[in-house]
Image (cartoon, rainbow, N blue to C red; front, side, top):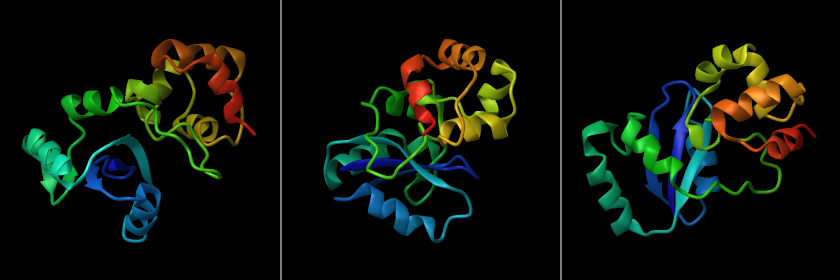
Length: 150
């Protein structure tokens, strides 16, 4: 499986191949300063991974890490939503297919980045007004926002 993992500190995206992307993310996390989040998955093998690396070569930062260009984020946004394994919480580091981060969305919604982080991670539910604003800017269904808090 081809995975796209984003680092919350640098916002760089690792494009790689692994049979178990969640285990790979967990292994990478031990050496990463920020939180690593799987933001995209697609079927493929090492040959497909190499094709994707070539496709986005202009944005290569180092090794398999790439800058979050508009083209790369668009490619990831077009992929099916990442399924969450049991125990995984939060929508994802970027808000659905919009590709917006907490920092992008906070001023548009009128709340702090920290509040959006708590909503995304299921710590609290958004107010109806906040949920409507998040929906308007990201396209995330209201039902999904209501389910985030548990």
